[in-house]
Length: 169
Length: 170
Image (cartoon, rainbow over the protein chains, first blue to last red):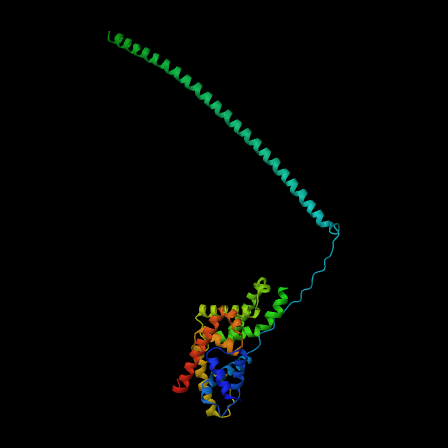
């Protein structure tokens, strides 16, 4: 092998100007023993030895486990007769009837409750009105009674005065 | 349609995704979890699949982002040399030569791990996986010129460190 050619390639390798083929050539060259290797090439021996050793170490790594791929077949389309599952439709119908009935019952209860509420309010209003009327009448009575009381007090003063006069004489 | 694309273009690269996640995380179990998560994420975004130019690069990008999120979220402790002690082959023909080689390899490995994540990933994607500049640009969401510039800088940094190892044994 022409060492000068390898030296030239190695110089270009250090400069980062080599092609993949040239780098493969260098790896091949350094993988073989060369007892009379020129000095300029010797500095690269440990580096290429390292590459070789690392590649061998990595080749000894365990394989990644296989990825299980589940074969998926397209599903067969089965046409179903609309009357095949009559119980489904019956159940749906029964549920619809049940829900309708429950709704109707609920509405009726709501109407009854609102009527009862209106009647209650009416009764409360009438009671309040009666209370106010009674209160008014009693106030009138009290007022007239107070008038009589004043007159009776005057009469009482007169009687007392008459008693005092007759008592002294 | 999406299932066909997933089976034909995503499932076959799951081992690459696993290796990529392993490089970033340094732990097999976490790498497997991240790969599974990445596959789930790819599947959940299946509507994007028909529009993508490079499905593999897209999957790699998702894997990288998930792995980096995991590293950030848990202040991830990358596997150190002690964790790797078990990886040293038991059968050694010449113990002295093998010890010397392992010593140099350990230094190179440490040097690569000490590189910024972007440089390290660039070198691994190019020199170990053999991706083209365009594919690396797609994976790392970079411009192709940025890939070339950063790869050059990464190799330059590696070369300097290799020279230090060779000359000073550092």
